[in-house]
Image 1 (spheres, rainbow over the protein chains, first blue to last red):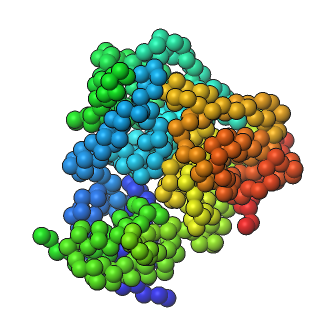
Image 2 (tube, chains in turn brown, yellow; image 1 turned 90 degrees about the horizontal axis):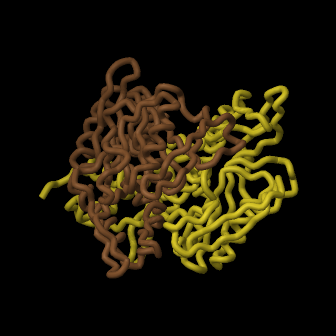
Length: 270
Length: 270
């Protein structure tokens, strides 16, 4: 039976809590893992709480009752959020990113784990105190950030597909109208993907007219799900009138001029 | 100027290292963040190393030289790996998962952040000491585990798409033959997605005939990339002769009998 010093217990507790964001871990678990009395663990947790909160790395919350314990609630300070999003915007303002047709290339940013980790932490921060069962996204580019959001909320991800697949079993398929191009698109979701009557948060990478998000909202109606929020990474300022009114963007493109190479993208000020 | 106690520094160092797997963080950074002498930080790191290694949570490695510092190398003990994969297999052996056509429904498992986190950690463990620039996957189901693998390797993810998109700019498109059904498929990748001459690891969720993986390998040739490894979550035992010889599965389906509901899936014994 190995004994751990306080130092060691504190370090290990932080590692375990950080690896399991938003998940309640019991005092018993720690007590058994470190062969320590619950009273010692309680004192350790107080130090852990102080460390995490002083350094603005999130919060440590105590949950009482039968399933009682402690959990790490990830968050980012307002200042860190602003600084980080401005750094992302700076990267996106590179004129080389303009693609024929007046599009902005940002796929690389969305596929960098350290960036999507922070983006997911920011989005999750909005819903930490709501009862949410799933994070829902539409394939493909929004998946990484949606997964990280789900990770920080400690709930499963659901990915709506463009086409039905034989490996998904019975699916629900709906048509939707793209808000900006007025084209009709199809989306489908396996009946097994979600329990009926769930609460969901929709996360997507880009929103112009809002057609895709509106499509996902219709799909959620088929599953009798309640949409508790919509977060998009990048929204365009134009058109001002979108098919979805209630959404939270992290960044906004106010203007993109292929001629001059000017890309006016800024963090959205909450 | 706030002073931190040793306890507090150790906890915070662990949190920072765990949040940035496989990334070198300098002693200077810690020294400035905690207003502590480098010699104190060195002693802290020794404690951190002991904690992480005693609890089999990975390794702490010191990197010397100009860019010197310390990094957290995530890993999982052999016992934990076996136990975890057996737990996943147990979930997958539920006869309710059999879909008409003799397919196994496992999408839900792949969309659970805590599960894909561990799967990604296991896969990353194979390539921690290789020089790898990108993790490459094909949309859609393999994306979460590929992203987690990329996160633990601290490198970007690249997602090969089924169709070209105007928002991706110039793309390379290839045709490939599905190994099991002999159908022809298309895959495309933006020329901006990867630097030429990179080293890559391919991660996908499922492999039967090996056609998709072979397609991705052909795509990598177009980018003059060297494939350093192929990892798949689930491979089928049949057909024994696959289009790709050299691959690492985490789990193997030996048999699936829709009649009796028997699903014979086991962790692959490395």
